[in-house]
Length: 273
Image (tube, rainbow, N blue to C red):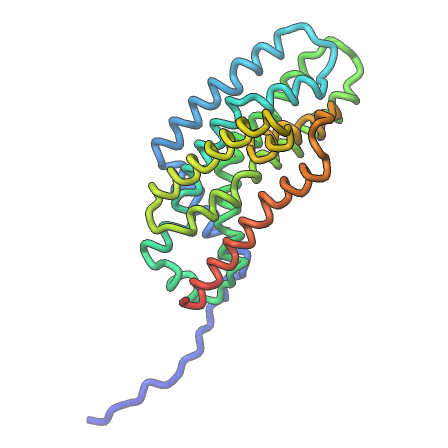
């Protein structure tokens, strides 16, 4: 009985587009977080403690228009930052650490996927998750205040609403690079979560202590940087004791440097180093 050689049969299916692979990574991370009881608990507590009462209070209190002072005050509250830190620590903790633990990089990069696509999927999923707390609720708050104003001129309020969208976007992405960087340094998501939270808290404490000698030390604290950003974008202005150039440099570095380190870390793993 003869043996028929198995000839090469070209695959006739459709190749998966690059953006489809990014969406798969993002949706997987997003759905995983939505199944987390801790995430849902923090989300509900945050909605109630940070947004529910301010939305009701500001909507019912007599006001002629939506103004920048109101939005800067509400977004700059320490409670909002605290919940953002908790959620970022939780959501980002297993973004890369879990792949390091399970050696999933072999599966990811065995396909035609680049480091940029991998990170785009991870960051996209994290953004969608944190947006449930950091992006949409502030916009809803601004709309509620705008919709209940007694004044007839809505144009200034619409401008504040547009600025709120920008502020909410920055709030959502601000802590992500550093949190993902911490996740890329360990294989244990619990270590990543605790390390991220404690790092932010230590930075806040250091900024508070040394700001007694020089106000610019406040820029060590991520929460203070966000507060100054809110004051700036809503036209209130930052304190004269704060150097605007240093603020801009530190703000940009806090996002860019951790992101660059994460890119190098993932690229090394993709190359098997």
